[in-house]
Length: 280
Length: 259
Image (cartoon, rainbow over all chains, first blue to last red; front, side):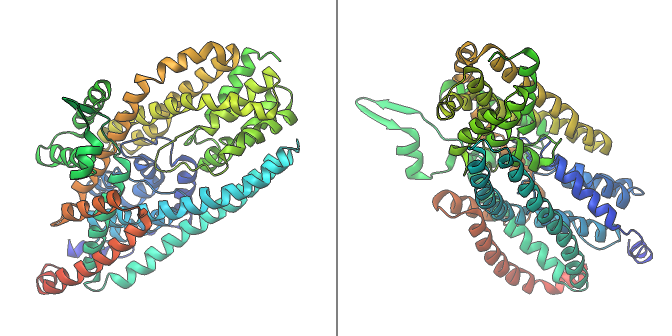
């Protein structure tokens, strides 16, 4: 490995065109297959596919590893969160050129940053810009002025698309510069450890908000009515159902080595049965 | 005003184009443009021959949705449906703009049903993509990412909205009622469980000593406090900093050998 690393220094360089192409693929298709299980995962693979081909086309093992890496759960606000995609592209480029960047490092950066940027992005875009522009457009539109919707649209695209583009390219740039200064020392290893720890905590927070099942069940014992959620679970440990479901899923996947499709059917059956019986 | 079959179909297409994720106008063009009743209402007005009235009704329907945020795959109400079908029905019935809102809001349940259905069914395309990934078939993943989910989305958006516009909401509202009872509840429960797979797969990928403990820490923080994810991420960064300092500091000799 060490030999090939040295020989292949900077052999595979992404052009600006490659990075921009990935940006447009993301801008149009990030949510084309949005779903409850992995949200934007296939959107990321779709956006990165020309880059994966270019960087790993001559190495079947790495090619496959790159695809599998990005099939993981990914969800962020697609405009401001594009900074993560930019950083990830830079990391893939360094890795293809022999840098010791593990799956964990790339995954850690993605999971650590996707939640915060989703929060920041949604607040700025849907929470701040959209109401301002809409209030303006509606005030014109309510008087029957067709410039209301037209100006609203022009302003929305005119503000958000340049922001998304700049943020994406900045992410790539930051990734390149940051990595080059880091690759020398022991720092990269520390970053992976740190990013994995941070990523796991953020994933915990995301699990709490995404896996949102609770039980409406009421147990009647004599004259006493006991609400399973409010009187039992909330007093013991509020999020016990979502936590057990997530950890149980992890157990099936990791310890039982079940295929994710099998687990999918188990969870759908669980949801259908508990939903029908009124347990959830 | 009578709605023809072609108009009804086009109104369905307006709704499809506004549904979050349709790629034709970029993501922004769906959620931040066609999804907004101000825009959808105007276009439905064009289709029905009265863009100005469509714009006025769309603006009225849009008012309660000004601060609407769609985040993390949840859609509590559906401005897209209110804007497209709601405007069409209001125009057809020739009601006042203010009354249009009351026509549009009950449609929200149908929108939720369509959304939850697509978010659930799309999971199967991801699993097909998993198979393709195991065979390193990038082309197939790209196909699965776009074509099957979009055909499905087109059908479940256009058919009910076109029927609703053509026959009028009084004919389809019993159907909406029947579907939004138990079937919607079951779909919602499934939708609340499925993210567990994505999160568990990610945890499996990180899989380091302590990962599970960090995960539970984040889970408890979010469950028991009202902190948002940004704040938790900052705290996570601080914890990660000290954890890294402590662990990597002690084992740097071992690391330099391995490196």
